[in-house]
Every structure is written in structure tokens, then in C-alpha cells.
Length: 312
Image (cartoon, rainbow, N blue to C red; front, side, top):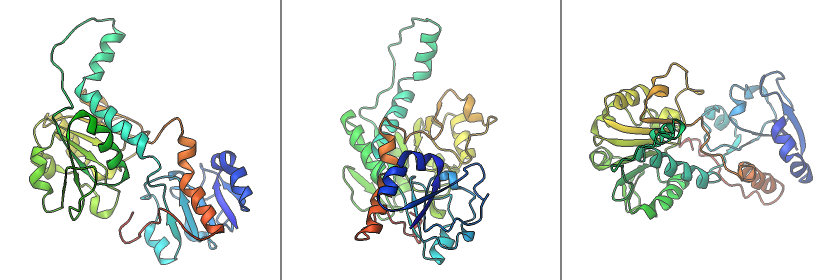
């Protein structure tokens, strides 16, 4: 069977792929449609394949992504043509969870001011700072990233709450709220941490109306998909100080436009979609795809199969 992937992935994992008996061909990330069809059975890629016209790839049967998000793919076409799609769900949970903790601490400990004072050699003590302990956090989504983040925040003696569609109980959350309960509990939460996938139903899930329902001085963290938050409404909530701050790893349009007001806000911490990064990232990024390549040669026990009706 033939695999189409990027030159980077082929270079890093080519020997492993060939040892399993697969043939590898590569495409140019800078011109994803330079060739219409490679005759491949499988694509292993990331967001770098955005814009690829897969309707031209007539032999395609499987796409194994090395990303968690899959909103850059035409899911309707994949469903209609019975192309099996898997993602890398669960493989980046630990490093992303650390970024959640890091983002909250940056805001509460006024990290920008600390660094500025250090750079300018200013020794200025302050007796007032903000705490994580005793606060209430609400995770929008109770998947692997939310669970890993909650596990790490548990040591701060916070109340850890979750949200999913039907309010089903999930460890380690003290409470899990349903869609019908969400708007009522937002007013009590100090931290709202976005962990929902990018789907039609989650588009602008946090919007002007929900920001208005939130507690004054709340903090927002987004490590999921940029479009789950209405960016204009977020900017307004930050400007008015309705929100104390935001820690943002993803945005509606990436790279973030240099003219975005978010760059200039002293209560915003911006990361360029890097919360997945870690010292063992190479092992993590290929883990799901490798499992599924082995499954294809063996018992067909695939992991992380996307449900096209749900969009994740």
C-alpha cells in the first residue's frame, strides 16, 4: 500500500513506515495540489494539507492525521466516499495541560509585569497578587485534554467543574453540567477553559451573550480551536475588563493578524498554536498514526476514528 505524506514526516518516520511494508511518496507543503493524484491509499499529514483537493485522489481510503483538530478537512466528502479518518486524540494531553496551568499562572501572577521589571532591573515588591487556590474552574469539554488539565490543577485546591452536552459524570470533575445548565453556572466561575472540538455546534460557543453571563473578572483559556470563541466579542470583553485576562493558543485566523488588538492588550497572553509542543513531541505526534498503520496490516483495531456525524 502507498502512503502520501510530507517530506518532514517521511524523513522522521520513513524507516518505521517502510519496515511495516508501506511505500512512501511525498508532496510539497507549499503547493499541495502540484500533482493531482499520487495513487496513494493512505495520507498521513497535519494541517499542512489544508487546501489539498482530495477529490482528485481516487484511490484514497484512509487519512491518519497527526493532529487532534480535523476542521481543515472536508468531512462531508470523506463520509460520502467511505474514507476512514483518524486523528491524534489523547496524544498531546499532558503537554497541553501544562500550558493551561502555565497560562493561568501567568495571568494571576502578573507575569508580564514581572518580566518587564526584570528586564529593566527594577526591584519593586508588591504585597498583592492573585491566587489559584480556592477558585472555581469550568472546563468546556470533558475530553482527554480537559481531564489531564484538571488533574494538574487539583493540587491547587480549586473546584474543578466540567461541561458536556448531557452532563454525564466524568472524573476528576466535582460537577459536570449539561447544555441546559451552562448559562446559569457561568456567573460563578473564575476560570473558563475551552476544550471543545471545532464543529458547527461549537462555532462561537463563547459569544457576546455568554461573556455577559460570566463572572466579572473571570479568565478565559483557549487551547482547543480558535473558532469556538467569537474573537470580536472576546476583545470587547477584555477591553471593558469584564474579563480579567485571557490565555490564547488558538485563533479564528492563524497566524494572528498583526493588526489584531489582542497583541497590544496587557491582560492577554498569546501563544502561536504551540501548546502541543513538548520535549517528546516526535514520539507523540506519530503515535496514533503508527498504531493505525500496524492495525491496517494486522487486526484492523484502529484508534481515534472520527465520527463524521459528530465531527470529532
